[in-house]
Image 1 (cartoon, each protein chain N blue to C red):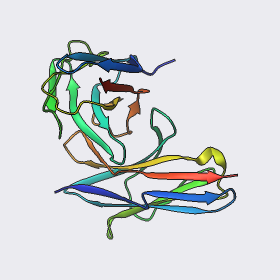
Image 2: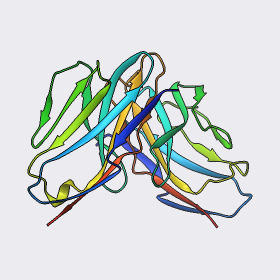
Image 3: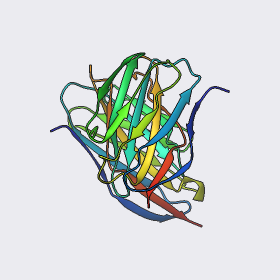
Image 4: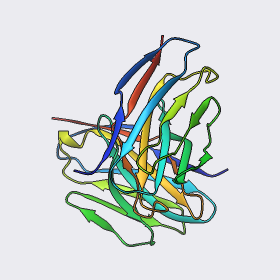
Length: 111
Length: 113
């Protein structure tokens, strides 16, 4: 069965800390992996990863994919209270037109 | 500005009633999707549509129905056959095969009373 597993389920840190969120997947015909941030309602797109070993960066956020070990990490450096959110990982399967989502990691950043 | 609009934001339903959730997009996206989100669980796919007048069941389609009569619109009906309908419902759209990820609406929170 295709699945996406995220860890940890929840995380509490203090401002300025660096966090690493994990996403592993077991899928057939893997094509791409997505990261989203969900603060209250609509998830917002962060990264799409298709190639192994190529880091994508956006400000304090970065992500990388390992297609051999079937996982991805999302790093957030110098965390701020505005980073508090649920971070969702999703894997896309070639030809299926749909993404499978993990349960998400709930991050809380304390001032 | 382009985007996806879901309405209503909050919806209360009595047991045994059907309700319809609206989803409209002006992004000219081909594909549209409905997901359900429960606490502690990820998004689960209910239905998706790649083109007008065509749609496919997702992983949890039982108790739900959809239509795609226009490219811009993809309404979801939660029927009385859905045993546990209280949840947060998210609509999304994407270009073609989702190669650039989804754009999500703001969601509808449905509560059965």
